[in-house]
Every structure is written in structure tokens, then in C-alpha cells.
Length: 143
Image (cartoon, rainbow, N blue to C red; front, side, top):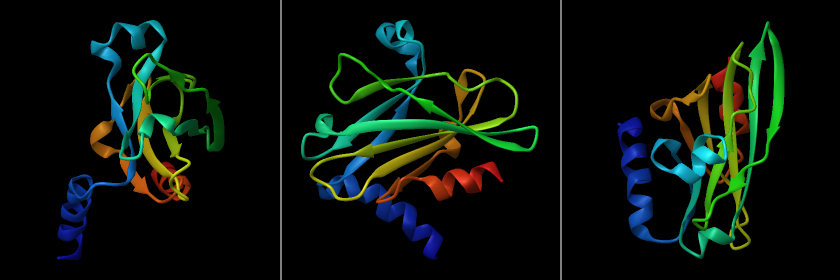
């Protein structure tokens, strides 16, 4: 019963107003994002001018049994709050991308953690974390 209620509560949060979230999207339909080398798009959304937030990203992976991290510089697109996340991870190994949003009106971050493979990402398996940077979820996904 508890597992059933959690998705329902999370789905209702945007309707309640407030909050700050990271959303993921595909660059396939946006020529600007393709030109900027996007493997995926990240958008800051919610109330309180989400475009005033800051986005950080890191690729974390396991290659030959060794943990690796590669900083990603999100590229701001012309739409406020929308960023291109370029592919910086190699094709070998298992990789996730952890995206963290911070906003001056909120004292806690919001994050998205998503598996990547080559130039694609698995949105269905993504974890969206309110109030944390997603580091624990990233570690769990790499196990």
C-alpha cells in the first residue's frame, strides 16, 4: 500500500503549487539543442521563477570495475531554464548522469538520476529526488 501511495503523492505535488523540479527531455525535436551537442535536455520547472535556478551535472560510471566521475557543463539554451546536457561519458562501462538543480528560494536541491548508454538515456528508469542531490540514488543505480 505504501508503494502505491508514493507515486500518487508525487504526481499531485505540482498541482499543489510551489516546489522546484528537474525534468528530462529528448533533444531530437529541437535544432538548437542538437547544434549544442545535447545527449539529453534538462529543464528546471516549478514555481518561484525556476529559470533563476542553477543546474549542475556529472556522469558517474563503472568501467572495468573502477568508479569514474566526469563533470558535465550544462549549456543554457535560449528557452529560460532549459539546458543541453552534452555526452561526455565514454561508450564503455555502465554510466548514469546525475543532474542537480538549486534555487535561491529553496534551501534544498532537487535532482534527476538517469542511466545512459552511448548517446541515449533511459527516462523510464530515471529517479527524481526532491530535497537531495541524488548521490545515494546514483550509487544504487551503479551497483
